[in-house]
Image (cartoon, rainbow over all chains, first blue to last red; front, side):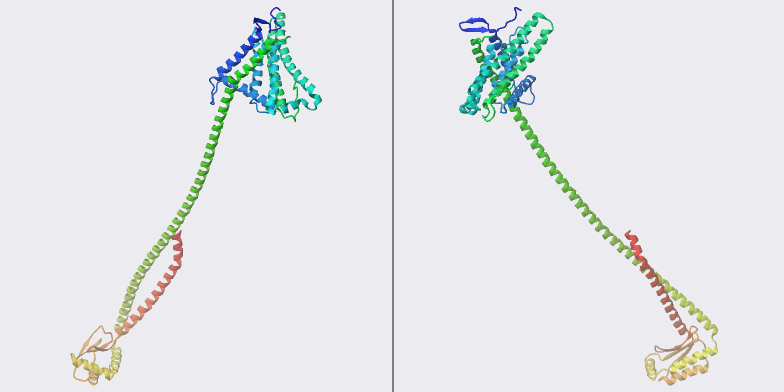
Length: 232
Length: 277
């Protein structure tokens, strides 16, 4: 039970206010895997009819993300693809790498999920203002009446909190349950739990990215439609 | 579950950095490659559509050409059929004309042969009748018949007009003064004298009168003087009979020839039809 690490944010190296912990290290590992993988494939891209398997995989991935964004937002995915796609790829890769023994997924840290939720929290008004202007965007908080303003603000904050806690809870619990079961029944059962964890991780990545897109879409749509939808 | 604020800020920065990195190394190159391929496919599709359109146009052109060739072939066949028909009619006409000409030649040849045959037949029949009659007369000849023949001769001699007598006299006085009297039987003295007496009475001047027997004059007697002739003989009658017989035979054969020609003319359309077939 001593191997179970509940909080991966505990510093393993400190220098002043800089605390390097497992979350940051594994985040960089995930970023490196994603970037390096993308670079290795895209440095020799084929523009003809014959393409490599890896390029085909990436094209399927990017096309899938674009189609999902188009379906959810009913808009062209052009400007949303880098943000929403990176959210999905980062969370999915983190959760996928969690299969590796010793790898602590960054998404099991509340700091990481809060940071991602904050990014969504900031991105929603930025996309909304960029699409409709600040006046139209702020008007949405007064819908359907002025009295709804505090509830709209609370809703905005609470859904950010929900995003962060949902992902953190799922990933942290998966890791902790896996570690605990490893102590009780070291054979077979942890493997099944890991598979469940993989499924849960992919679903959580999908849910996080889709919800982010729903929030952004609700802010960028015209105010005649109902803007807020939790979608869960 | 406490938030490490340094980690929180660092993760935000990490995430923004990852967004930029993936945009730089993943989304942009992949999308550009896909767009390029899409354009390439569109170009190929467009090219294929162009090629298909060209092929369809060429196919339409070939169909039109084939139609024109068919039409031309039909026209040529019709023209050839017309030419063959005209050639056939021309040659049939020529063949008919040749046949007609050959038939006409044949008919003419037959006519000639027929005429030759008829003439020969006529000649032989007449000669035969003549010989037969001559023989009969010769066998039947007697003094009474000869006397009658002499009387007829004398009647003719006495019947010469004065003008004719004068002309004969003139002719005799200008040439030989000779008169030949030929008879198919010997004249008696009295008959000879009657002849001499008649000559002396009728003609002016003196003439040498010669009497001679000519067996060919069957029961006949003939006087010739300076190209003038007074005669009667059975031979003359026989020649008349021969002429009549020849005329009758010729008429009969002409009738037969014209009847056969008419039947041939009726049969000729059938012959033409056979040639046409």
